[in-house]
Length: 178
Length: 280
Image 1 (cartoon, one colour):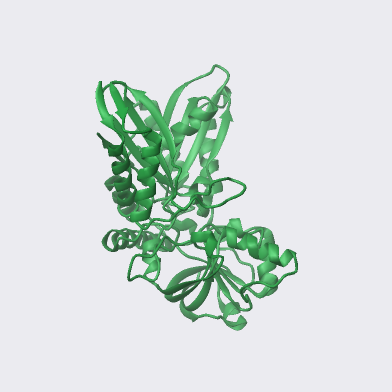
Image 2 (tube, helix red, strand yellow):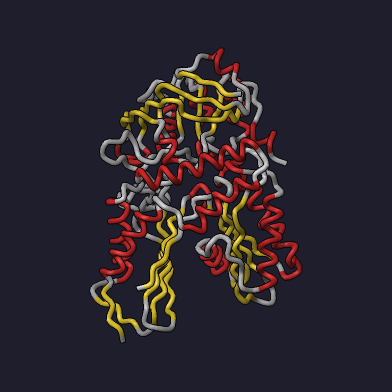
């Protein structure tokens, strides 16, 4: 099934998504990868406030190449999600509802996502030039010192993804691998 | 002796960094375009068509094919009749990488220390492998390597009794474990024989052999084909979403080895298998 979705996504919409659906996302989302996740996780462990509010938010696991003049962003495809697994349950507990990346997730992330009604979407890895065409705005929100790993806020229009883990915990990779 | 100014190396490396991150070599791009013809899954075909379109957009609009523009791996083959002048050759390579990644709007993905993890800011240093070869030329091969697939690579210290079956099992197991994480369809580089570190180096070098070109050893060419067929029957498919095209090629390099062993390194590369050479 193909659907057009706007974010922030309410829990009812999230619950209606089914693994294998193609979705085109429009709205604003955060961008964060390894180093930013580590910092957020450490703040959570220390009981300190986060620099961003994750309630009902979407996080895209990505680290873009620099933007050329006149463009919102450089190449911008997904990075491997499993490297974020260690930090993810803590973020899901703070309201994160949509994750976008590529590849498999750990059992712990799957359990935690199901418990919180969150969904995991995948974008096509290695299609960074094409995906950047669906990103209309980008700005660094915090951790600028991390360069390509800084936390960004991006605007997307009809950003193509496939549902890899729906709110019932059905995994696209398990169902498709022989 | 032929005097050779290393500044020419810096210039060539800079130009190659920029070019190969925007345009794949013909062997890889045409293999990717041909893959759609044998893909049986609808999702797989749609992913492959996105990847084709991605190559077109990257080339036309000068946006890197993938945001992971890689760690620069450089193979230098230096003729023994060449006298390098004008500075240290590795500094020249790194100057080229620094310039290419800055001027080409490529991502800086290198941290100075594996544990402290502070970005070096210019994608240096490169990983440099140098060989002294006959002649008076300098050949530079650049292979910027993304780490989604690098992380899924493996080294098996197989034993002589494992034989060909053991090699097939090891490579297929590595590709299966890599699954969607390595951005299939992948190119599989295998280094068979030598010792621990030489097998890994051969596996990396195997990724710079053009896709579609078989080993010149007949039994190894047969093995490449056999493993490719087995890998493609795993069903992982484009982007790992199911399908018949899991790998574009299996390239195996071999070297004599010890009577007690059979090292087998598997270096996996995503479909953005960037490799480019120049001889100066």
